[in-house]
Image (cartoon, rainbow, N blue to C red; front, side, top):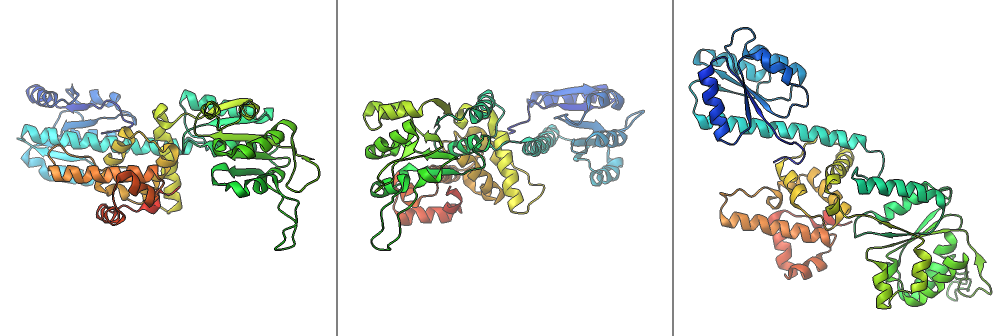
Length: 445
């Protein structure tokens, strides 16, 4: 199964018309696309480095023989598999050809299933080669950390470039793991404020009792230390960008004070006699529709409209599946570089997971998966294809591993949340993690 490579064909070359017709019929009945050629020279013009199929050729042919054809094709691309057909007298010659790069050989007379089996293996081998070449090329072509060439991502990058220069407040909407903070950093780096700081605030992580001092600062003397209070995140973002992540979780009392900052561009620290001006840009982010919070009464409507000068929506991966290969390639390359690996290749189980998974954790989940691939965790049966002939117990074991990995991805490796979602006690979960060789640390964001 290939994620990137499309239709593949077998080019069958033999000067014996009867044998050629019989073998072509065998491959055709096996459901394989096949095209026949009476001699070596007629097939060569059809071969280039992008050829996605394989060549099956007789060795003994007038003019250019099969060995000469193999050499000519390998000069074009040594990764094109070539299966040689030979008589008993030429077996030694075919073995030498294997050492020179031929994929396989079949000694006459051969059974039909031997031909079909060799052809299927060669097609799968060619798909692996092309897929890994395209992954490498995709990683090398990326010039932006916001990865993807789908229409939605092209529009998003163009909009970010325009908004960065406009210096207006922006509301970013996107599911968990889509890259909201990355968009905020891009808006900041491409703006005239890039020389100053981007100050990020995770509103969900701010304790209510500390939120005011943390955000707005304090000019009060700390009785315990005798020191003046803190500057606060808002004042620290002066001349730069204030990024408020998960703003939908902000306490209503804090929202009221923030409204003044957004409206007047001034902040009054706790204990201060008067407000002071701040020059900043506000970028807010939410993983849900903020208007739903307004309707529910948990978010101020006036603050919503002040923040919602322009709204950027980051599409989830499931809405732009064509971006998955390039994004995965980028993280594979990043992970392999960090671990000092070269020539890394993905296998069929990885492509199957890329195709079939819905990626609820979006780009963050895809990145975690890429790192686990480089660490060789996909050899875990939870990610390997489930053969139709596998025993029921084996299929259940693989299915269980997949569920555990998906849940760990959704919870970012949080054991307590994983236990709750799966409805299993801690000891049972750890037993299963050990049995399936799953390391929860690799899923932590």
